[in-house]
Image 1 (tube, rainbow over the protein chains, first blue to last red):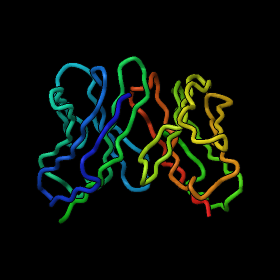
Image 2: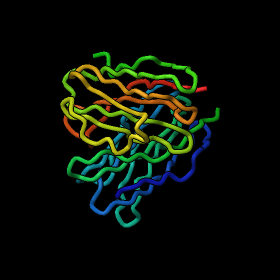
Image 3: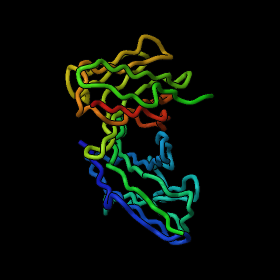
Length: 113
Length: 114
């Protein structure tokens, strides 16, 4: 069965600094990988997803993630943090063939002015 | 489109009471999911439906939990009787075509069982 580990339940960065949120997955087959964001008192929204093809995936709000099979990782990055990026971020994995998403426990991002 | 609509936003109840959470998915979406979010366990899939039919309820924690989807525009998640450990945020989500396509989440129901 697939699983996701998000390293760090809370990450704090300064405004303008690099954002790096870590995600490692476990899957018996080439996975589909996702990042979702949850703003306070809202549901989750899709940031980006990887299925096949180019391993560097660009998403909304300047975020991107790179699929690294050798490291079983799908880390989320953004070159310059903005105050509005403060939220909870969830990595998720599923397997091709229409299987449900399995979510990590989330990483809360704080942005300091 | 108004998105996925959940009600109520907040529910406070006493142990032993019945709780019903409601969800209206996005029109035309074939899949509906119920998730539970807690600090300890994160986001867990409870059950999902395809074309109003329950497909996998293996995530439903106990027989106290039940879910229905009587038509394409409405689903309920019921807890009877409720217990304090059921306190969590419950999310409904829908997807147009598949399980690993983009999920559209509602704003959730914050449930507190005293």
